[in-house]
Image 1 (spheres, rainbow over the protein chains, first blue to last red):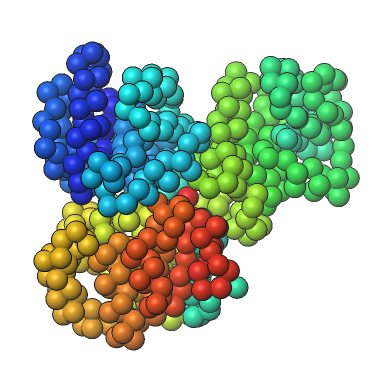
Image 2 (cartoon, rainbow over the protein chains, first blue to last red):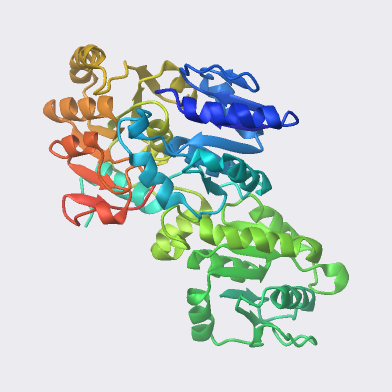
Length: 163
Length: 318
């Protein structure tokens, strides 16, 4: 099952449309989407506005592949479960977000294991092929770097500003 | 470079042979083996039957991955070095060891982060593939970023625990405040640093309470600079809440509601930590730029954004 996550803040109809067309051509693929408040209603995959967190984790865990906007929440969660992920950055020019930070995020994530960056939905099909060719990677820990945890602990325990 | 070590007591030709086959298939990988003088002569790896302690330490420090028999000495030294580790237990039936203790050692380590087990040579290649991605995967930022961290951190990383708290430090009330979604995913990854303190987690979605069962969760309204009226309601709500919570420390990952909590927290006597989101790669977020005025500790997650003084980089939520 392919799970699509576009955050719940703003609609991302551009991605929903491309995916819907892809689903029409690939009826054998089961696709579920948490699409937020989308204005476009997909016909060829199951779209939900928002899952409760418990249900969200369950669906995410059982997905073989993830398609998402270039939000760090989606990327970190995919890494946690070792699930291959394709990310599509939201663009300010199309009023999909408040700033273009998702473009910058996508750029630093490009080429990392288990991540496909799709900047241009004209290449959606090739990106999907790349994504589906990827297999589940290692599960990673759901914690921050120990150096960061230590900095927080020392600050809270001792009031020390780290050097 | 991959370092293969089988200890010094007995050779382990089954592992050395399998690694040699793998090295033949992966000419781009440099492999060094400490082999304890078995009968088999590796053809595709650099072989040193025994290593002096200094040499062993040097190779361990320079390698990117370790492959070892399930000997406690090898496992401990690999863990201390902070390198991803693949272990294969010796088999007493094949005369590789006198008892089955390596099997139990391997089992004991099987669930640890950063350690992979190959029970048989048949699954060694697959596990090696996984091992190679682990080195790349250590951190979102740097390829092979594990090496960049200090020894203690590396140990903690592999044992999978946060470093120990300072002994005798008082229990503080820590208010963790952020928006739901990605900001909250990042916040969750830092909560292990707050063990032993009284936590209050405040997000803009009541559903997030599911993720923090052991502590108190408070839902606030989402505010964003796109919705001024909503923002004002949030402001009023926080004006009422924050002084009453009397947190010793406020920790936030953003965005707008996080900033409001940070500001009000600081003004009502809390010490304030801002961790700017991982999503901000080339510029600190707007909330972060505003929060900088109020934060006692201001952390970013990309080294280039740090100025080394007020704005610091101490690692990522990964």
